[in-house]
Image 1 (spheres, rainbow, N blue to C red):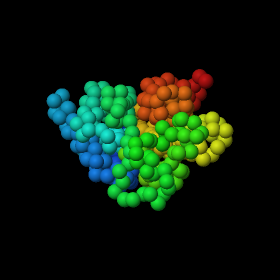
Image 2: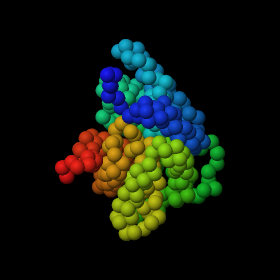
Image 3: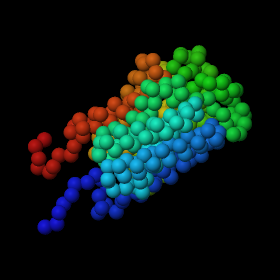
Image 4: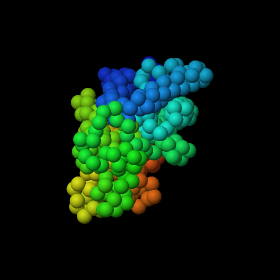
Length: 323
């Protein structure tokens, strides 16, 4: 009898490899990365390169130190570094970005046994650590576009002065009037982390992942729809107000690239929808009642810890089993 080994999905007989999946995720993040460089200037490029190189180097050195088989070729470290970079602002120092990548790879991923064994998303955990440690530089930033974006509206100069959209939207109806328009939010002409601003670029990545069958379309949509419905009710059924809250901040980035992580989300599609609805509700609660304007990363990190319970609740019953 051949020796059987228990490994994390995808399995060898599935026709899909970790390398292929991670490469698809990297490709899906390219539009958001390009938009980040266009909107925030060359500092965004340096942050992306720093995070990716630091993540890959940290995984290589860690595997070397613990005498494990090298896994840098599966692109998982590249995904972690790129995702962390897109969650940072241009105010962050490059050494801080490198430190965040090393923490994500070594502490959150490596010390738990490597890919498939970490209990929380490494990039999210690193971002939350940086928000707590370097709160003044990791939370958001003004835009410094390579091109003139003033044709999009009068709100752009105000945003360029340093405020992020959620800062306006969370201060009431009068302040919300100064927030970017839906068009500005779609193209990314506003402040924030470098990868969250351009919704159109993120949607392109979403379409690619769905077409490649890496993710199910309804999983990230359930996250986004939950946040939208909550703000629709809270805003007196003002559709524009709800759209502004959905497009501002990291809802799209979190829903598409972080809430669909194979390792740190439930095993079944039903469980993943429950996960995303819970994350959407927590995002709304943190933003609406909390003192912190953004809540996507903390919401997803919290739901990561609840995955074992969601798995148990939504697991499939075997035919003929006890209901």
